[in-house]
Image 1 (tube, one colour):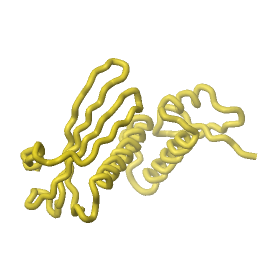
Image 2 (spheres, helix red, strand yellow):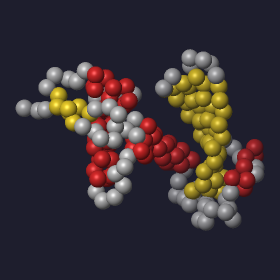
Image 3 (cartoon, rainbow, N blue to C red):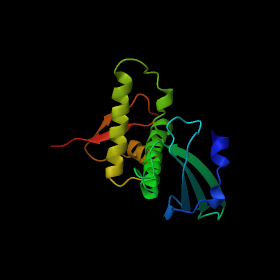
Length: 173
């Protein structure tokens, strides 16, 4: 399928969207092209998407260009280019959340595999991530290390068995 997507006439397809964003120590320009397709190896595919990301590390000045392809079953009438771009960005937001759960909380290494415990621990991890983000935290791992080292006054330690760092929750009342 990748061969099919890369062989589409992308040079002839007009650029439909361009966004620029600066965050996490890098600037990024994303360009999107969308083409209506038939007979792809992906059943139900109605549109093919090409996204080119140009990322520049603001500290080192190093620039990388990545091309990503995607397909959707949505027709051009069902989803505009901007809507498709938003859906793809939303997907990466979810992937980033799972990346935090795996790398910071070592979720994949957890030995809890059956019954409710895996879901319960995922809920606790999501709660911790959500609480930290609501508090303005952008680096979850650093915040957990800082809280483990220096808990807030009146905080109660809660053991997180699958995490190498402790979790802290403030008691109310």
